[in-house]
Image (cartoon, rainbow over all chains, first blue to last red; front, side):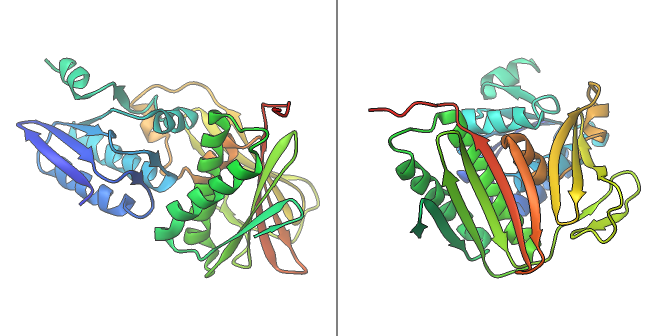
Length: 112
Length: 193
């Protein structure tokens, strides 16, 4: 299991558990995200609070999940990114693709 | 293993071992550069580059092991991954034509886009049959949701190219070795006492 999930009706708070979001868990993460999207969530708020490092494989799974989500009117927000993770997303411009917030609270405020 | 200022680390191409080898590499670099500490931005780039080189080895080399080499001087840090696996093969983005190195017929310089992620067009250029130089060209700004449609799910070569000041591939036809080489310029130019 890669995600710890807290289902709040249409909003799912999902925390990535491993410290290294990498090739070793990218496929499982993708499957768990697709299950959440197919399960009826309207918004998935994905917390990176445990993640010290993310690699290209995991980023690829994240983009696949968003491509699966968008036509189904599901959005994915990213929260609690550590500087190294945020900087890598910025390097490859994924900060333009995903909505990024400081934490769950700030992300939830945008929908209230 | 260290020889004449170079550090060589053998990686068994096991994906579970990537974090261990990354930390081992960074520890070696920190020790090697203790009199001229590498700043945090450069360390982050080094970590991204090492991880992506190792991931590339696991995914694409088809071999049981590869060697990582580090070399540093006052100006730059050079990281090289060497393996005896399959030579570089890329799809030309526009035509889906497969290009394999070493290039058989290079009557004029070869240049094409590998993929693009929104505003970043990842390109490769070859002016020699055994060498490829990766670089990024900026495209016009695209907004969501069009940006997502334009975004590839492949980031390895893009990260390697953008995190490096120079990123190249070379095929050694005599030893039948592939070498991916990342050069990162060092900001600190003075040794500490």
